[in-house]
Amino acid sequence: MEILVLVLVNLGLAWSCIASFAVASLLFEKGTHGPDNGAAFYALTACLLPVLLTWWLAFGLTVSRGIFDGWGLSRQWQYGWMLASCLGVVLLLMGVALDRMLPLASMLILPVMTALAAMLVYRVGPLAWAQRGALAMSLLGLLVTGAGTGYVVWQTTLRGAVRTLMATGKPDSFVLGMVRDIDPEKNFGSLLNHTSRHSHRVVRKLALDKVHGVPDWEQRVQESLRNGHHMAALVFLRDNAVPDPLLFTEGIREAIRLAVEEAREERLYPASWEKGKAEEVVKKWAGYGVDLSKEMAELERAVARMKRRD
View (cartoon, rainbow, N blue to C red):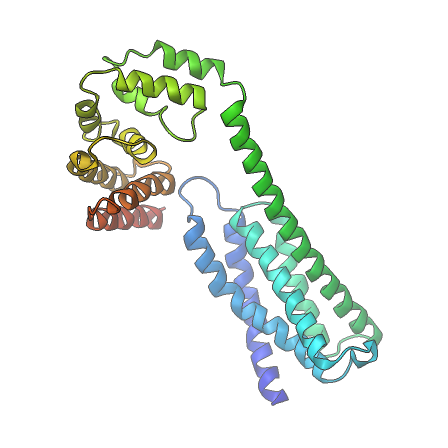
């Protein structure tokens, strides 16, 4: 059994070298043409799951040899400790790669951990050093898990504070003045950009009042779905109620088709964000019994091809 584990560890150590290049490429990915986080997540999972298994086999083999029995913990606790630590380090590596942050520091995690696993499994160096190294790795893994949890909580709190500020704080004077100056008859499509749920409540209310103040605003929204303001019109429909949703179905189909054309011509930026807006509208209209999955699938294919070309 130990021979099989050693063979798997050797294969895993080789794979770890390959995975380091995949992780590094994501860490240094720039611009809107790179893979979105969905694709990156699956790529990282495929790369790092074998690495996680390799680390755990290496450290588990060390545990099975009884090196850590002197700690006074049962073997089950030792295996669990090692697995939790390795998992914490892998999750940290995935997190920083997905967020494209701390690239230089993050690149050291994978090779250092892989080298430590190799040293432990082949007992390179004094045994006491190996024990201290494994203990340090375990503590690092637990610290990383705690830090990752803290980071998620902090980000959630920060986003909540930003939303509260957007709802209750002072609106941007430039944006507010710009919306005040928009002529709803001449620049109706421009108003739709400011009816998003992400706009400041004062700005959004002013924009919505101007939109609804146009006598034929429903017809104007349908026209916007078929011209250069189609994405703004989709945002309006995503975030605001309309008297007769089914009235806008064909316009939404046309708006998605226009987005598909833009993606094919590499004019849809940022592609993932724009696709996400269309997805939310499609889900909302599915609640009204409207099937827009065919148009959405075409947009997804066009965006995927756009990214592959880049």
